[in-house]
Length: 247
Image 1: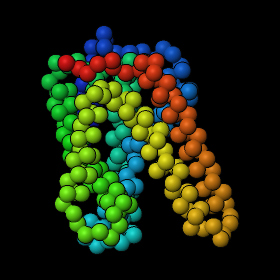
Image 2 (image 1 turned 180 degrees about the horizontal axis):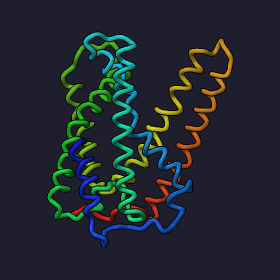
Image 3 (image 1 turned 60 degrees about the vertical axis):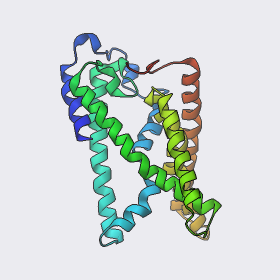
């Protein structure tokens, strides 16, 4: 992450004028119809709920206070990194900013290519963690309480890895991927499922907290519906993003 962030900060300032976009339109600087897709993408960057139990269990001394400290520090660092990269990328390339800001830089830029390699390695090392969580959920759902079965283990693991690899090989615009994932799983995990769980667990009580939970769930449903329609519409029209993978 550090290599990618430093690359965007340094190369953004060195980008030639021909590659830079403009901020002439005030629509780029105010709330517009793209806010729901932006909320989905930002939510996707901070969704880690499915790893929470694993992270809690990995602490040397697992306590709520220590877990709270870890989550606040990690979320704060992530927020700062996302803000720096987003602001530098947007202020540099303006209306030309792509879903993956690294694609705004020339293909022969050595420093950016190193950052692209690091980005690929990050995805490569992230996949096993995500596949592990998904596989455990699938096994516990379809085969609860069954002893370890190597055949099922290989079947689920191979299916998840191969399907992810196939999708990645035919997808070049990460912006569209982030928007789709943000519109579906991120919106559900960040804004819909947590308040619904709270409402389920506190159904015998009332108060403003339940009203806030209902409002959060409604907001998440609104974001999911609108951003999903916008993302699908963009895919159908072929708007916004690279048309082919970089050679």
